[in-house]
Image 1 (cartoon, protein in one colour):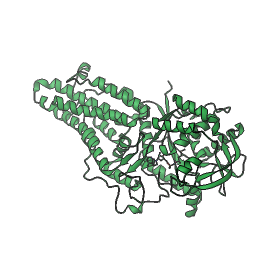
Image 2 (cartoon, helix red, strand yellow):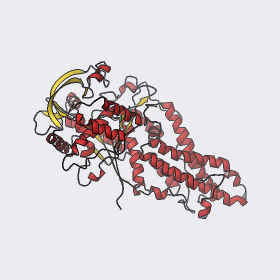
Image 3 (cartoon, protein in one colour):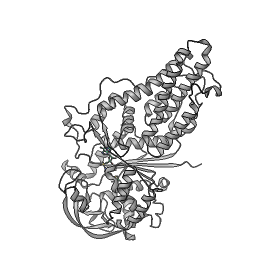
Image 4 (cartoon, protein in one colour):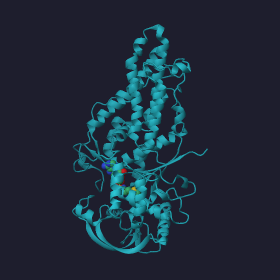
Length: 545
Ligand code: MSP
């Protein structure tokens, strides 16, 4: 039987930057999705990487006396190392300076030149050097002719360029967006925003630049023009899977980015694919199924910035990891982050409270309470029970039904990239176990020898529900849930893809040894984001939007 596949991507990050909370956030979201899908038995391809051909890479390298390639090599390595330390499970890491990418992009552009979708013309307009982007006249006016990216004035620029015939695809794109079936944009506010922009009219866009440097991919058959970095970068999603062994992953199931790059992903990219898929041999270049645009993290109530000292860079991330651990950081990012259409605040007190409320006092406490009672009343072994007894409804608690619903809902939410809702299902089950313990009071029942059977049923149901909840929380809390599985006598390997079987009620076998477990230690003081020595932030050539 062939397994269903899932292909998920992050943006490829500018190689000039050092990884910060924004990069870690998007990549962690994708990681949670990828882990869930692997656990659920899908064949997953999870891609991240670095975007390397920006002109500012040449400048930054020159300032350091390095070649652009050496500078890119150094910085890409930092991203790879950090993502490794954060146990992010990307299946590949694409770098746009790699031959496997540049060769394919050359081919794609050659196809579009052949079809006339790319043609030579002249362009004059307002150019934002910070984002390497031309800004349309009306938008430039709105921005008072300054870059929203770095605050510097926009420059008037005129050049001979290769253009992409974007205007030709306005109607087909609008149609696809409005139908919202095979090509979806979420959240809905982003979809509306892009529909309105397309309705304003789409002009052809320049997709090449000339200049003294040869850092970039040349327009095929032309000695002077380099393919504009954004076009080069967008193709990474396709180029990485464009070979025999991987082509079945296309189309991407989800492209995840923040709202800053909505235009490129929701307009330029699908239009390029529409153009490419008309070419013989490229019929497979369908549109991605879902584009998900999250919002931004701000920090301590304000836009992140180095001068305010609230920029969450690697140093800060490391202090959080040292104090609360990796799973706690993942949990906070995914459940409290800007997954929807509004920005979210990374604040030290808030982090501290969420950690204690959800992880220490809920997940950790419940797992430990249940394991302690099984140790105290049943010598640390799940008692013998018939299958009927395992499912017996006590105090109106229909666990088989509730757990099945939670598993279904968590799967559906993950599929829709509503990851916070998926996680909430696991947490809600744990809270219900706490409520069940408070209602049934097993510690009182334990005093009555004639009620051993009832005690066994109650504790079985508690442990079984904790086990099922832990499966739902595994993708976001991989380290701690593995500890829990170990303590609860479970050999679980999410890579085996048997989530559905494991999550069926009654899987916990009588006779299973249960060790006492303490998952999340209390933390005394919040980790401060703004510290007095924060001025020494590492090399960070630009602030994030
Ligand atoms: N290189 C382009 C993307 C090309 S994709 C074909 C780029 N790179 S970037 O390094 O600037 O990364 C932007 C992405 O980083 C955002 O879309 C988002 O995923 C993440 N974030 C950067 N800052 C962020 C926040 N403050 N909050 C949340 N995510 C943020 O654009």
